[in-house]
Amino acid sequence: MEGQYWTVLMTIGFFIGFVALTVAFVFFIYGAIQLKKMVECLNDFCKTTDERLKPVLEETEKTMKSIRAVTDNVRDGHREYQRSLRGSVRCRWKIYVRSA
Image 1 (cartoon, one colour):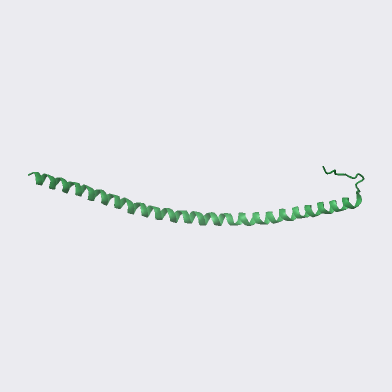
Image 2 (cartoon, rainbow, N blue to C red):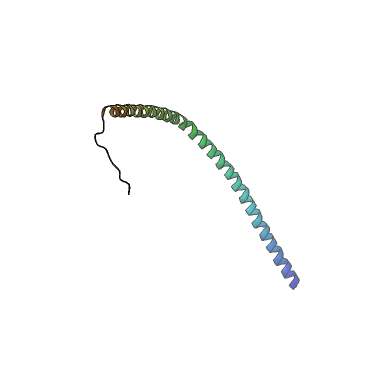
């Protein structure tokens, strides 16, 4: 009688464990399928974002080249101005540095 009690109890325990393992396996498969769908959606999002940003990046590149050209012109003009000042202005004072 006591042996049958443990046999029934172990059978019920194994059955509950099997059902729990099956449910966990089904949830794992469902999660994997949902993860695959999410990755596909993320890839589509990245692709559409890239298509939308491409014209903006091209325009930004043109703007940066234009700004670079303007700053180069300003730098060259400033250097020419400095050269013209060096030739026309002479320093009247001499600075003596004493060493200790």
